[in-house]
Length: 141
Image 1 (spheres, rainbow, N blue to C red):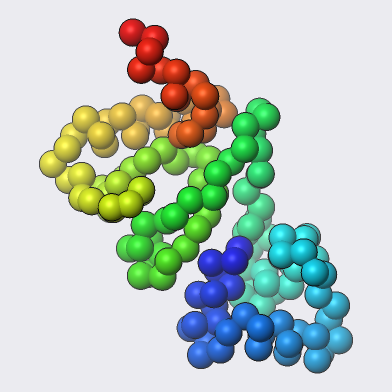
Image 2 (image 1 turned 180 degrees about the vertical axis):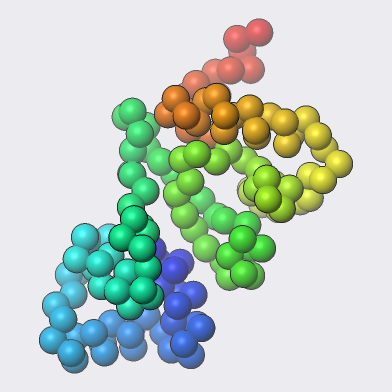
């Protein structure tokens, strides 16, 4: 949500503090915590966003869903962080590595295949890209 707020402010030629000051002036109470349900709802209304926006779970099957940097082309050039439990280490749409450096994988078919396999089999079972099961996998040959 924080990266969305920054992008929203930039697109509207203001910053988060100015936007939230305007919210307070209109009598809308703003909770102190950044990810409170009330605050998320205010930002959904400001951006005319769907009700499921900002609703990615913080944990799945006891494993914490990590916030990570998103690929710049997917975020229209803005630096953004997000939780993507169903995605591994590759943006299949743009065929790019998600971690820094965000290199192209157009010619590296094994990485694209591994990402598809992860999404189709493991992510559906609640396995996260940085979970213990993924760290243990290379040792299980």
